[in-house]
Length: 201
Image (spheres, rainbow, N blue to C red):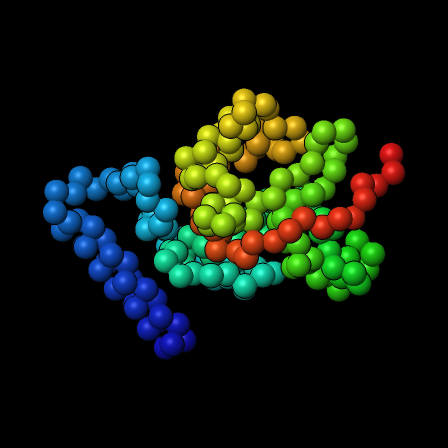
């Protein structure tokens, strides 16, 4: 019980320190500043996200490269991608490694080799795109601004409306969550799409 009370006291002191630091900030009006358009990290993450951040860093099926990236955003992005949004189901061909399909009663093992590299066919002309970073480190070849516009409007840079992708749902996420997803996608390794054929109709 003593350890629990000391943990609470430490947490309270930490919260007081953070709150005091924000209140004493030069010219602070108490609001959270909006990140600049070219800023890809350092977006504030609330204390309520700490557990999700740590779980996300544990859940990622591929190693993440945190070099130059915000660890908290990458962890939160991994949690959203791997525990909430089911991105693997449509953007990894096939979603599970051989012998690792939980729907067949096997111990779950995500297809790390082709993780989020797209290639899933959903009918004529509808194939999930590769979300992994390109040679410039851009997920799906998109800047953050283009990614945000795609998620909010469902329109590709060409103007075409995304089909199958549940962008009307994902587009309602808070900015910090969409930023976190983008940062996680920046941190995963590039991969090539798998070549499993589309299921028979």
